[in-house]
Length: 323
Image 1 (cartoon, rainbow, N blue to C red):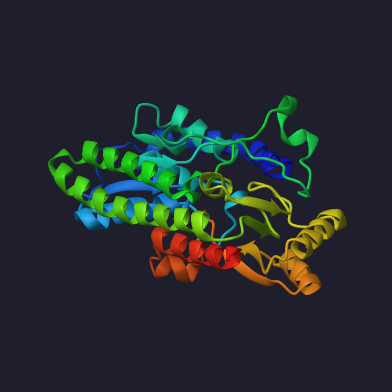
Image 2 (tube, one colour):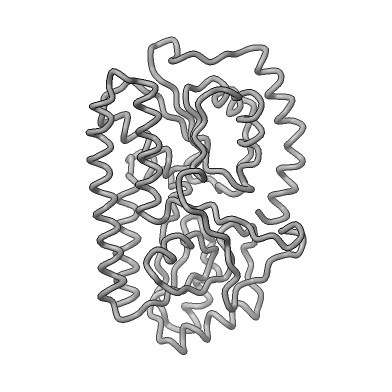
């Protein structure tokens, strides 16, 4: 994670440990809460939605909590004392791993030692962030001793989401062994929908004449582009805390759009769109949003917009851009 986020994590570290210690005196963890519901806490929308879909399809009484506030900036998240309490008392804590969730690693090593913790980094093959041509360079202090940082947006590839789903299903079956058959049936239904997304992406890769995407924003789709062989150019890496591109980066993206006759320039949810607006104004390209599923808008959250629907919309936009 970039230096500003690391500084916030360091500043919050002592407070987090204090909260953990105090809450350890006040709360415990059983197999379910007082009303009989399982309690699951998740750190990003993609895992929240997959867990909630499992609960809804199985009918297992389950309360699923997303720590991020809908519409909030996920890369600036810090757990509050109430969040720490929810994590410590839940039956299953699902987190991604990586630099931005170092606080989660500390909790699982301390207050949740011996409890059910599902680290999604353990479910898929990981990729490092990469600095492609024209991208804003990394700050030297961002990576200790020149070490590459793992890209945390593992769920953006449908088959990775499928692996995550299977891991969630395994936890459901261990928590509710009497409902194992229901769990497997629910998992199979969602699995088929994720395979349909994979087939859709492969069809785009095999049949669209273009293979280059341009992001005038952060780029959290490393796993998606790697899975289907798409090239990309972007202003920043996926976990960058930067929002203002240099003149050199802006000029590069504008020239790339012109040279390759790019008709679509992408930006992310919650983006200021300053960079994409500038590129589109200079080139006549169209600005289109892709959603990372790190978090969603308040409207999408309350409407229960599923991961599958979001990714289908993303792939439809990519298909149009590459056609």
